Image (tube, rainbow, N blue to C red; front, side, top):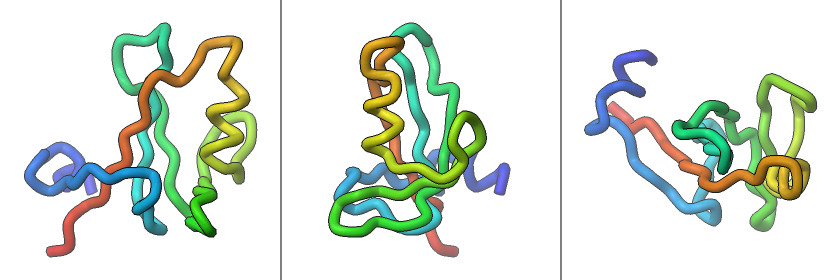
Length: 86
């Protein structure tokens, strides 16, 4: 897994509408210089992306995470990656 995530040739960036189960979502907050949080897509149901993550709420949705931090420290970017099939 480490090799898959550290070699950019193995990764494909995706939009939220094409997120699939197993994709990894990286979050970058406005106050941070780097992406510093990750979650895994567990479902994409009619555009609502369901996530599993560590932190405040283990099972949540992408829209809930974005809303939770909207005023305090907004999420500036999300990056959705999918490791290429071998």
